[in-house]
Structure formats: C-alpha cells, structure tokens
Length: 161
Length: 367
Image 1 (tube, one colour):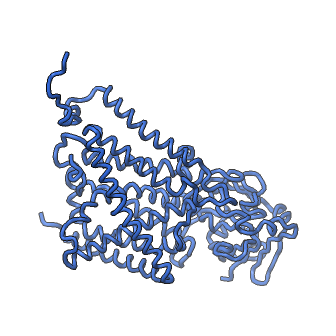
Image 2 (cartoon, chains in turn brown, blue):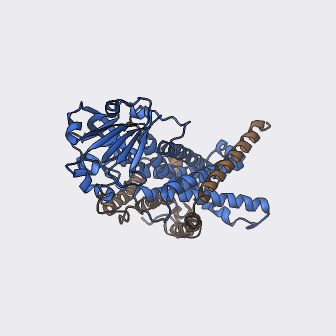
Image 3 (cartoon, rainbow over the protein chains, first blue to last red):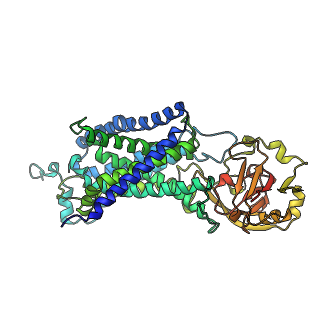
C-alpha cells in the first residue's frame, strides 16, 4: 500500500513549525547580553557532555560489569531497581544538601532529604527482594521457567545424591 | 537479549512518544503560566474553576519531572548512534547531528534548570524565567523537527511488536518499557505531593512539605521583602484610587467592612499548591467604594520596595469576580506577616507570585 500523501505534508508541516518555534526561541535567547547567552549555551552544552561523555559511559561500564557478576535471569529486575535508584538520585540532587535554603524561609526544603532518599532507595531494593522471593515461591509457568534460565543454569552433571 | 538488541527503535519510539506527551503538556502549561503573567490581548484566562492554575502549573512540574526518567531511557536507547560511521559525513548528516545536539541540549537545559528552580537553587548565573521561556521554544521546535524527520521510522516502530525475536535469557524490550513506566511513576510519587495532598507524606523528595505558618508555605518572606516595619506600622493605610478619587482604609476600617470567606488554593509557579480558607473584603467592593468600573483592570501595589513582583495588574475579569478578596485572615487567623499582613490579594486561578502581599495601594486602571 502506498503511503498516504498526507504523510509528507504532515512531516513538512512539523518541520516548518518546529523551525519557526526554534528560531523564535533563538531570537529570545539572542536578546540577552552576550555574557548571558554564553552562560545559557555553556549550561546546555555541559548537560550534553555530562550525559554523553560521563553518565552514559559509566552506565555502560557498570552494566558490562554487572552482567558478568549477576546471573542472566536477575538482570531485568536488578536493572529496573538500579534505574529507579538513579532517578531518585537525580531528583535528590537539588534538595539533598539543601543548597537553595535561605534562613528567612523555612517552608522551602523543609524535609529530611537524606532520610527520604534512604527510605525510598531501601523500598526500591526491598521490592526487588520481594520480587525474587515471589518469583521463587509462587507457581511459575513452564515457559517462563525456561525463559528465566541461562546457559549457566544447565547443570553439567546430575547432582550428587 | 544483548543490550544492542534491547536498544532499538521499538523502545525508542514508545519511550519517545511518552516523552513527547510529557514535553507537550510541559510546554503548553508553561505557556499558560507565562501568558497569565504577561497578558496579551488575545489571551483568555477564566476565573473558574478556582483550582485551574493549581492544576496547570502542578502538571507543568509533574510532567517535567516525569520527563527526566523518560529522556534518560530515550538517550540510552540511541546513545550508540553517537559513534555510528561516518562520524562526520556529508552536509545532511552534519545538519542532522546539529539538530540532535540542539534537541538534547535544550531539553537537558529545560529539565535541569526547572528541577533546580523548584528547589530554589540558582546555581546558574542567568535569569531563570526568561531563559527557561526562551529555551522552551528552542526545545519544542527541536522536538517538532525531530518528529517530522523521524515520522516514518516512528510509525513503523509503533506498528511492530516490541520484541521481534523470542528472548531466552535476561531482559526483554518489554521489561525495559515496564521499568521505564515504573521509574516515571516513582519519580512522580516522590515529588508530586507538593501539589497533590494525597501524596504529601510519601513525596520524600518534594521541595515543599506543604507546611508553613497557618498551614500554608510561603515563597517570599516579610524579611526578604523588607516590610517588617512598614507592615506593622500603626500609621498603616490601604489607599484605593480611581483617577482623582482616593480613599484610605486603616486595618480597622477594612475589618469593619462586610467580610467574605472563600476556599481558594494558593498555587506557586514552582509547582506547589495548597488549599486554604481566606477571609477578607471583596475587591469589587473596594473598587466600587471609589466609583471604579467593573470593566477596569486593577493595579496592586505592595509595601515592598519596587521590584519585579512588588506590583501586579489584576485583569478586569478577575478584579470583578466575587471570590477575589483582599484577605485579612487565613484559615481563621489574622494573616501571618509572611502571608502578607495587614492585607493581601487572593484571587482564583492566579499564580501565587501575582497574589500581591502587604498591599499598600490599589489603583483602578483607566480604561
């Protein structure tokens, strides 16, 4: 079936509208003094560099190491728990040490964030533990059982009785 | 499944779709907030339901925070493309790479500055509101261009099953997606309590617990505003003017006028909000006392020395609304100094920053 001609029109419309919005945004940025424009651009670029050259490679390295230490059937739940932990850590950055606190206003940053982060991390990993226990104790369908097995699960010889 | 197979357009497109929805909500609610603060003749902002701004601005911050796990997975799913050959390539390839740089740079800029701003951490040395507003167009534009360029790939990927081959060992693409939705839910739960009362206790990473004097948090304290002395002065008068007509009200005069009590939320641009019971004089009664028209905008001037938010203009629609109060009491008690004693504006569907505190003067604006 041929692609509907509206597809091309939609794409062109999206790109043109996107360019208009983007140029308008650039004009708004451009209205700032040069030093401010530089700070804005540097902030945006540092974000990209931090992700591409620091965060992503560290994740790859950790993932690479974890794959060698952890049995295959555990990868998925552990990866999810690790990712949830990373997200919690991201969200904790601006509140953990209360860098924005001001003595005249105690209604901002008024929680115990180290405790909150610890509890939320503990809950994430506790859920993982419960997941493992549930996976072990609950009746499992046969194909799931096979799916969860890796090459390492095939025993080389019958267990000694 | 290897990570190479886990990354793949099936994941990228689905997480990208969710991210696109989050960005769209964030962009639209952000524009709404901007235009309430910088009114344009074509912009219409209703006074009902009274919680409208509470919802739009709450959604702005919630969708922005939801975008953080989404963009993390989205970037993970395409990261190896960074090293695809040719690294430099032809002009088209360079333009494509540049557009991706703009997209990622502006998105990370918006999410990082927004997250820092709600915690009032001004680590950046540029003005938050103007740069966040300008970069919002850059980010939204880059997203639209990106969708336009990738549309055939997105359509194909969304039409195909998530996992194209049976998986024998380890995670599947479906588990990547499930993990992503779980992380989005977690990020929401640990922060959204600053605007959703039900989540208040579990939002352990929210910049606000919702507590404060008289059960309401504050953003600008009386000390920061420099009004400690003027707000408590026995000579305090609220001056109301309409052209040459001018009347001055002492605190006792205001207390002697007919009082109205309404439940109205105070909703901050930073995404926190709480409901409270406000008691005071209906603004329209004060405007009528100086013969002002119901069709006129009304300017609020604070005791606070001139600054960006020491004076605001209430559009006529809000100024004549029966629920717009010059509040003297909050939750049954005389206003705390930090909440704007002797009197403050509280109107439906307005950002907290425009609910001027420590009022010294109300001017009916000539039409």
